[in-house]
Length: 165
Image (cartoon, rainbow, N blue to C red; front, side):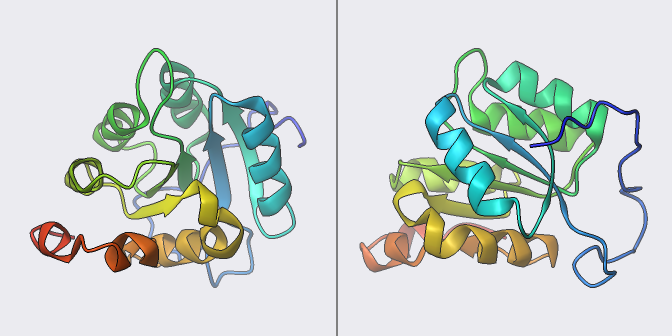
């Protein structure tokens, strides 16, 4: 992944420009504390998206979001120093990115609910990343919520129905 420490500014988050249809690649900041998973996800996304930076913990994720102002953040939940949900909450509060998708192993209804209440737009299970992550990113950037179908199929409909998107 090319190092984007060239001072290039991010997309103006106040703009109505739709990065999904403007011909410009969607700028992604990716975070996971597992280096192998981080590399796999980078490889999965590299052809379709502009990967601006990676982070291996929540504190670094917030700092990189402030620096690069990506169009979207894709983050693991279980990271050291600051978990992905809390890091996402801070990023959204700071306004340096308005769209976040989590990529996680957790299919707990409580975690799903907490993630969406924090402002996350997409929730993808790691085991389904190859089939779902690219679509989830596009949905989220278009302002739509995405939830791995497996979570819905596992009987979490009642809890999910209580979430306001």
